[in-house]
Image 1 (cartoon, rainbow, N blue to C red):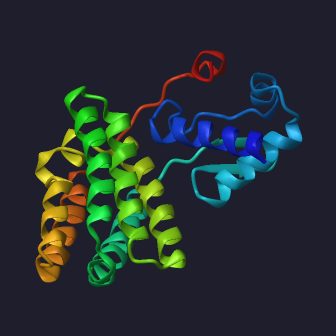
Image 2 (cartoon, rainbow, N blue to C red; image 1 turned 180 degrees about the horizontal axis):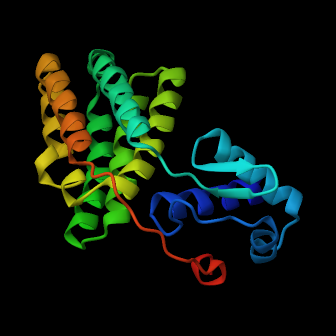
Length: 219
């Protein structure tokens, strides 16, 4: 259902972009009014977001944006290191010039976001790069797992990250493309491991919440 998907993406992207911060309540009535849909439709969207660990839903309290813990943050990145470094040999076997071309376009958007100091957009395109890279392995199950981890880590970076989390310190994705173009599988695997470890080490576990105006946010 297009309407459902559109609402889901708007709320998820607002969470990842830190426009909806951890602890912010997501009232069904206000969201239903804003999107001009039933509360049942909003409830379905919120349930999907809860399944994917973006929000929590508690009886008699409703939904609120989830606050990742330091332990969860470490576990997510440890999982990404295991899965994404493990995928590199398979990605290399399937690697074709058109894959490099498509990923360079994502990198261009990522670099533009960094140049514009658009932290939220940089997080978004960083996640998209890793998701699109995983697709090259031609394994739908693992791609879906990487997608879930990438979006969860986007929320973690939005909450706990610094400029170093999406900056040059963790290396440019174009370096990985160059290694895959040359068929340097071991070097690409090492690069990916180091890349994710640097992001993990850049996290700072503190945050503050601010009130939100749903009418302004979802204009």
